[in-house]
Amino acid sequence: MERYNAACNAVSPVAFSERQFSNIGLQKRLYRHVRETFGLSAQMTLLAIRKVAGSYRSTREAIKEQNKVLAVLGKPLKTLTEISFREHGAICYDARVLSIGRNRVSIWTLDGRINLRYSKPAYFPAVATVTQTDLVYRDGAFWLYATVEIPDVEPADPSEYLGVDLGVVTIATTSDGATFSSDATEKVRQRYGRLRGILQKTGTRSAKRRLQKIAGRERRFKTDTNHIISKQIVCAAEGTKRGIALEDLKGILLRTTVRHDQRERHHKWAFHQLRSFIEYKARRTGVRVQVIDGAYTSQQCSACGFVHPDNRSSQAAFCCLACGHTENADINAARNIAARAAVNRPIAVCSPDTGGEVESQACKEHGATYGIMPPTEVGGS
Ligand SMILES: [Zn+2]
Image (cartoon, rainbow, N blue to C red; front, side, top):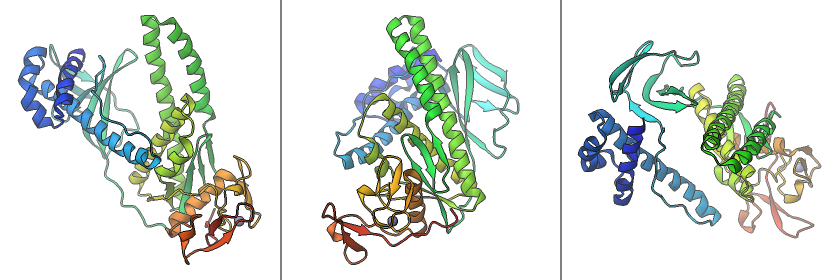
C-alpha cells in the first residue's frame, strides 16, 4: 500500500504539469519508469497510474460543477491543483486484478499472491456486479470496499410527490410533517471538536494519529445518520407510491452561504451527501425524484400561494399575510416543493415581468409588486 501510494505521488506531478489525465496517455508516458522505480507488478503499476488519472478527472468534474454554482453567486472560481496521495490511501483494484470468490479473495502483494478468507455483510445485495474494490487501511485493519452495480428500477410516474426541504438546523423536513434534526450529529461534532482542540495543541505524533482517527469516526457517524434519514424518506415515498421532490442546489446555496464557520461547512457537506443518498436509494427502488426550482419556497404560502418575505414571521414560523394560514416554516416550504413537482408549473417571482400569467398585487408595506400563485393542493398530506 505504501509502495503503491509512493508510485501515485511520483506520477501525480507529471500528470498535473502536463495536464495528462487519460489512462492510456499517462501509461504511455510513465509505465516503464514507475514499474522500474517502484518494483510493482505490471497490473499494480497500471492501477497506480489509473488512480492518479482517475483522481484528476473526477476532481476536475467536481470543480466544474462547483464553479457553475459559484458563477451564479458571483464568487471566485476554483482551479485544479496538484493532488497528493496519503501514505495509506486506498488501493483501487478493478475486477481483473482482485477476484472475489464466494468466501475467499485473492490479492497481489509485493511477496506474491495471497488468498484470504473474508465475510460478506448481510446487507450485501444479491443481484449486484462488483465493478471496483478498494483496499482500505482503517483503524489498524484492512477492509475491502466493494463498489457494486445494481440495476435501476424503472421509476413509476407518480401524480403526487413527497416534498423534502433540506435545511441547516433541521436537516430535512417532509411535506408530511416529518422532521429530522441535526441535534445528534451536532453533538458529536461538538464533542469531537473539543477533543480536536486539545489534540491540536498537543501536536505530538500520536496526537496527530488520534486526530486522523476521530476525523474518520465523526465522518462515518454523519454518513450513517444520512443513510438512516434518506432511507426513511425513500420508504415513505415508496410506501405511498409518491415521487420525491427536492429543490435545486441553487436555492439551497443561496440560503446557506452566508456564514463560513465550521458548523456551516459541516451542514453544507451533510446535506449534499443526504441529497445524493436520497437520489440513489430512490433510483434503486423506482421512486422518481423531481428537482424543482427552489426560489421562494420559504416565502410562499402553501395554502393560498401568496409570496412575501414577511410571511416568515420568524425562523421557525410561517404566517401568511394574505390568508392568515400559519404553519411550521419548514413544513410549509416542503409542501411548496411537493406542489411544484406535482404540477411542474413555472414559478411566480416578485419582478414586474411576470406578465399576464400570474395575478400580482402590490405589497402595502414595501410598495413592491409580488406575484401570487394560484392556490395549490398538496394532496394526501
Ligand atoms: Zn396564504
